[in-house]
Length: 191
Length: 250
Image 1 (cartoon, rainbow over the protein chains, first blue to last red):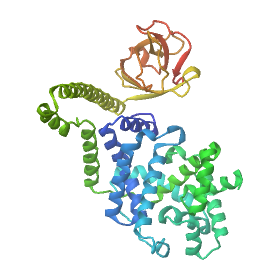
Image 2: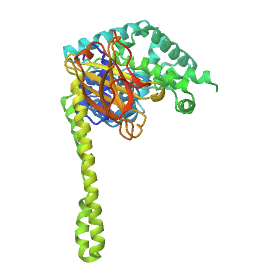
Image 3: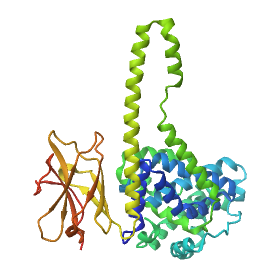
Image 4: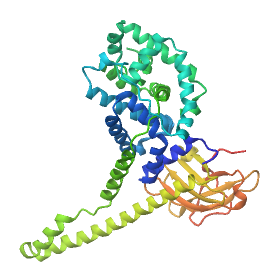
C-alpha cells in the first residue's frame, strides 16, 4: 500500500482480524514476527518458550483485535505491550527465584532475520540504540532490567545494591530523557 | 496520595516495574483519571520503542502453522451446528414421550437450523468482504482514507479503500441508527466541483456498515469522502448535515 504509512494498514489489518479474517492475521504475523520474537527471545532466552509465547500473543490478537482502540495508541505499541507482558509473565512463572540474581547476565540471541526485514528494522534499531547510548548507565540499567528482565523497582534495588528511592528517581529521569531523545521519531518507531 | 504522585509512577508502570501494592493503587486511580490513562498510553509508546533494542529473530515456520491451525479450528467451531445429542434424544423420544412433545421439539430444531444456516451465511459474507477489503488495501497503488464522524455522528468512523481502477470498499462502525425510509450515502468531492453521489447503505443493529463501490473516474483525483443521511433510494445532491468526512487532501 502506498503512500499511506504502515500504521494505517496495521489498523486496517486489525479491523479485518476483528471481522475474523484469517489472511489478515497471517499478514500481521508476517509483518511483526521477527521483532516480537526477537523481543521474546531477549526476555526468555529460550527458543521453545519464546515460540510458545509468540503463538499465545497472536492467538490473543485473533480473539481481542476488536479491543484495539486506535485513539489510545498505535498497533505497534499494542502488539509490543501485549508480547512483552506475556513474555514477562512467562519469565516470572519460570524463574521466580533465580531471576533477580541472573538478571542481565543472560545471553542475547544474535539470530538475525532475512535481509529485507533486517534492513527495515535497522533504522528503528539505530534510533533506539542511539537514544539509549546517550542515557547515563545509572539511568539506563534500571530501565533495561525492568523492560527485558521483568524486575520490579524493589528487585532492581536489591540487584544493584542501591536504595529504592534512588532507583525510582533514576528510572523516571531515564524514561523522561528517553522520551525526549525519541521525540519526533514516532512515525518511524510506530508510536 | 494525590494526583501528581500517581502521575510520577506512570513511567515505571509502563515498564511494569511497580511493586504489587503500588501497582494496585495506581490501577485504582487510573479507573477514575482520564488524564493519567492518556499519560500511561503515551509512556507505553515510549516503552514499546525499547523492543527495537532486541535483535530481530526468526521463529520456526511451525509457529505460523500452529497459529493458523488454531484460528481455522476456532472458525470452524464457530460455524458448527451443535445439535448432535439433542437430535438422537429427540428421535428416541417419539415413542416414549409422546408424538406431540416430539413434534414441538422437532419444529424448534428446524427453526434453529434455519436460523443457524442464515447466521452462517452472514458470517461467510462478512468474511468474504473482509478478504476482499484486505486484498484491495494491499493491491498496488491502493489508497486508504479514514472518515470521522462529526456532530450528529460523533464517534462514528469509516474507512474507504480504493484502487487505481476505482474499485472501492467502505467499512463503517458506530454509525447512528437510520430512521425508517432513510439510508447513508457516500459522496466524492473533488476540488470545488459539486459532490458526486455514491451508493447508499444501511448499518446493522450494532452500527456497522459495509459496501462495495465503483468510484466515478473523475473522483479518483484526490477525493474527499463524505457520508450523509438520505432517502433510502439515494439523492443526487447531498442533504446536510454531513455525518462523516475524510480530511481534504491535496
